[in-house]
Image: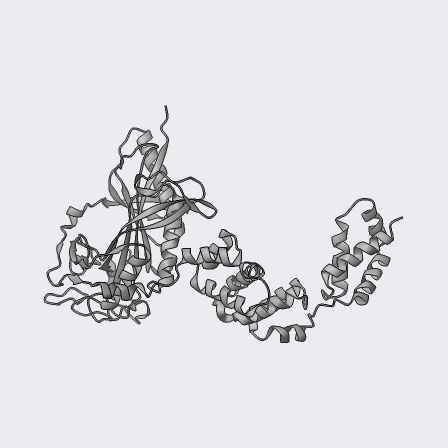
Length: 498
């Protein structure tokens, strides 16, 4: 009997914190704008003997903020440790990190998987309602602080090292192995990114490497509770890479077991061009890193007042905002998720509502449709067209001052050149005409000029009605009210029926 397998997935997410200085020194953390390599450096971040690190207070605050957003407990007593390994991008030969006592731990996040009903992590057997799908609660093992490494540039016969990035504050978010589908892993990663952006602690720009994923993957027979040997896929810097690499590795491991082999515990790289994982080294366990307390940094002592001061900084997070949009604005879960995927878009939507007479549903239709299309094509920020201007434009369509097609024309003009919607309508002569006599004149002319099409319509070709309406729109240059046009056209066609 052939076994059916299920994946067991845990994610480690590394995000650089948006601080002005590095984690343990005063060097600038803005390595991306450095004019040349190896200038934002000092004895501390390059690991010179005798240099003494000092913890970045802002980084600690941002890390605690993330921990609270992920429902974690904040450890009032937490410590730094030395994580020993040797690689050219690690100047000290060890990384200052946190191990036994991280700043935050034992949190959770609810995620969804559209393809497979999932059970709560940790062995619980009840399903969680998640809008348009079934969900699960993923446990967050820990949130800890460490320092980023230098950047290696590999050439044909040598490698170059830029230490501008060395020592930049890095946050690591580690989940328990509770994820059971690639789709659920993607949802988890997407939601973590959204939270980091909502909190303003990370830009989420994966192309620049400020947010990276590492997937720990194993497979086991369905119904089994064992945790088999896992592989870790390092440095995945896009959702696409996370999905492709995870799916490939799941299928690879299943093939290994079905052929009678054993999966090796190892660290893998992802070759995106070939679409395969490649072995890098045997997978390390904690003892391989020889963790021991960082002697140059005292333990952090956090009190309740400090934690409460961080807690009050928490904004309305994506999941809460999504639920509110569904309840307050009568949006579907998918509509609300799109609007809340970015804080700027959600804020823009609510600002448009304040200035509009049209319903939130109508505003959402415009934002999700024509607005997003123009936004993607123009490659500008959402607020390049003010929410007030969009609301004004939508109201002009709703009250039939202009047609929907004219509204699209005006929106494109706003994205290209800006301006006032009413002035654009006036300048381009886009105002819609609802004068019955004007439209009736155009309808009569179209009917008189097309007797053969009238016969076909009367013979049962009902689709010609839209053609007749289109002819009126063309004749009036899109100014005729389409609803009135259709009513008058139907009446005229019936009057000509033999």
